[in-house]
Image 1 (cartoon, rainbow, N blue to C red):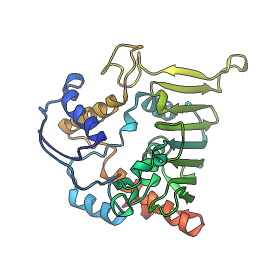
Image 2: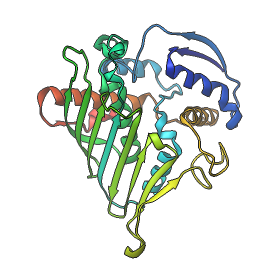
Image 3: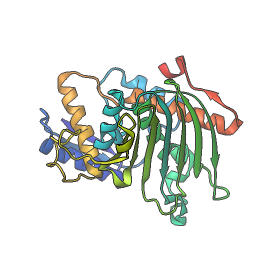
Length: 307
């Protein structure tokens, strides 16, 4: 299988590493060979606008595809999904999400593509919130309504430095999202907390091998938050990577994403997250900007999600 990779920056190394390493961990019936690498036009998370994303998704058609929302393949997040699907949280009441880094404080980056609306489309919304929204859809379902505000800490900057969102989900829960490139002291603080009638979950990418779990169905005398080391046994991807207790790193989420995609491709199975998932995230981001501009709650439901 020949690969053409668009992009040559930091994240390109993570993708390229996955291309080289996936066969060492996953049984995939493809030999991967990188044929073309080019780096000229940035594009994140999928496109600059919903209209562009729709054109891309339509051009792709039904061809097998993936979008690199790789945080779904963090074993601790995959275990959180398992617990939720098993009903171990019961009825979900609250979903809280945050994504903070301090990249916006660095004045030397002020003129890079991430800070130009024509190149990036948005700031913290597209750079950070996009990942948080996909993780929320994966764990808690669709957002039906939201209210948002954005802020620029640097006068004259073209894109948002920070964004806050209040949300209502289709499962009846309510949520909040924060994303900022001015989270001084956080290198890549990407996390969530979920509170339900039977328990709660908590995760932060800066401690990516651990999942916090509280089981409210236990006897009161023994209730307490567990800090689970999600490296096996019987944890997601523990049979793929190292033996129990041996932690994995950021790069393994890319390997796992690619491995799942290639195995599904060989079986003719649909993979997620794909362009349709990314298009839905793009549409929610558009509603975030619409709400921030109007100062009002906006609907994100019905045919708007169906694409």
